Picture 1: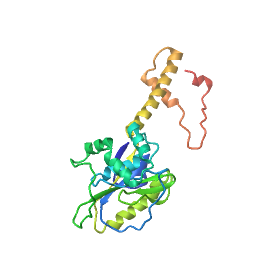
Picture 2: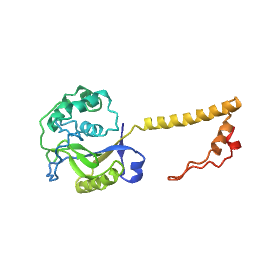
Picture 3: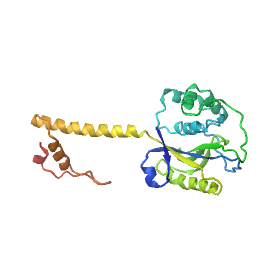
Picture 4: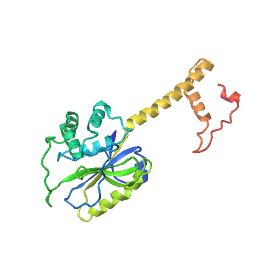
Length: 258
């Protein structure tokens, strides 16, 4: 996967990064009352861990997305970690994260040199610069906000893998507007599929089609086509059909034979 910093929430910006597995929102944290109810009895379909480490909320926000998106290949160790902690309550899941050697190494390879150990939580003062990361993602037909400082996941309504970005956009904008009178430091990041892998797959398809074309030419003429011949073949190839239409090749049999 990759993490992209977002500068816009419009459709075009999101479409260029598809598929988006989840969003991570960074904001200046304040001790505020939140009356929104949290979900219970979610272990069968949702991974949620309480934040037990004060300096690892970014790592935990990424984990909240990775461990809740079945299309992501977690690898052997993270898959085993998810299975092992599935029935743990949120606080024990948080402790399991702090005791995981794999996660400790990953965190310390990117973070500032601070210990990845559990510390006592403290309340932020008005002049403290305390920043916090939370995750947004769709799971099982619902949109969730996962914040390790809350008692549990917060369900934000119905959402599918296809429309969840439309659902979450006004919610994030509302949250930004709520703080905008006294705070302008926000950051929004998208966890997406690795674009290199997608481009490599597309390249492999193109190379396969090219090799098939070259093979057909060799089988009929016994020689490799020149660059101009390949260009001619590309121009003669019919355009792909529009969505919902059926492709009809109008060339004659003689024209199809090379």
